[in-house]
Length: 205
Image (cartoon, rainbow, N blue to C red; front, side):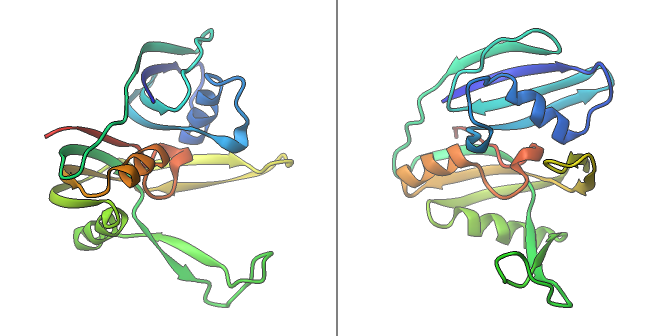
C-alpha cells in the first residue's frame, strides 16, 4: 500500500466529485471500474486542496494542477489484540424503502439513503462496521463540513448534484481478525468513497 500527500491547484472552483476525477489522473493505466484508492481532503482553501491518498498502486507524477508532495510505501501488517489509534471520515447512513414502492431495473423496491443524525446512531453504525474484525475501545465523534457535489451522468450532458454530511470518528480500537482488518482498510468503510469518505487511518496506540 502507498500513502501520498497530494495538492490540487484550483484553476477553477471544484466540487468533491471533481477532486475524485482529478485523482484518477495519478493512475493512468488503471481501469476506472477497478478503483484501488481512497482519499480524504485534509485542508481546502480557495487556491486548492491538500489530500491524503491511500492506494494499492504507486501514483504517477503528472503536470499541474496536481502535485505529489510525498509518497511512501507501507506494509499492512497487523496482529491479533493489537491496539490502534484511528481516524475515519465517513458517511453514516441508513436505507429507507421508497414510500410509493418504485422499483429499480432488477425489480427490487428502491431505497433511499438518509444520514444518521444522533451520535448514538452514528456510534452504533460504526460498531456494526467494525464488529467482524475489531473492537471499539474509545470514540470521539465530530461533525464535518458538508460536501457538495455535482456528478455528470455517464453518456449524458446533464447530471445531478447533492450534499453529503460526513462525520469524523476518532479513537482507539483493538484488532480481533488481522486478515479481515487489512482487507477492510484496503476497501474503506461505508458509502461515498468517491466523495472523500471511507479512508481509515491507523497508527499504534
